[in-house]
Image 1 (cartoon, rainbow, N blue to C red):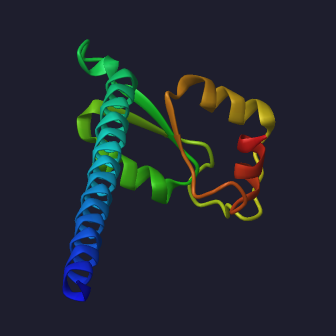
Image 2: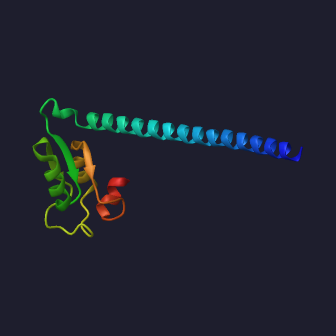
Amino acid sequence: MWIEKFYSIKLKSLFYQVKLGIMVEERKDVRMRIATLILITSFTFSQIGLANLFTGFANEEKVIVAAVVTQLASVVREVGGEKIEVVTILPPYTDPHHYEPSMDSILNTLSKAKLVVTTGPHHFAVEEKIYQ
């Protein structure tokens, strides 16, 4: 009698462990599916955004990119190649920490650009004006 109860309890315990294990595996599977779906969706939308940004390429028009300093402009020019035209907000050989162009000059440059490349919102004084 005691042995039968022991085996019965063990079998029930094993059944619940197996059932619990299946539920845990199903939860992991659902999480993986959700993570994969989010990853694919974000990748798709990022590609659509890049395609909209560079629509000028199909028409052989150059995309105008504004860079804050000449050092950034040279990096952008190397990456973009012949497909882009780079303009700088600050003139060459100026100290970006102290030189502040007029707001009209900044707005004139930014109005032409489709993309603006900066080093951050508070690194240079001119960048604070751009972010305002």
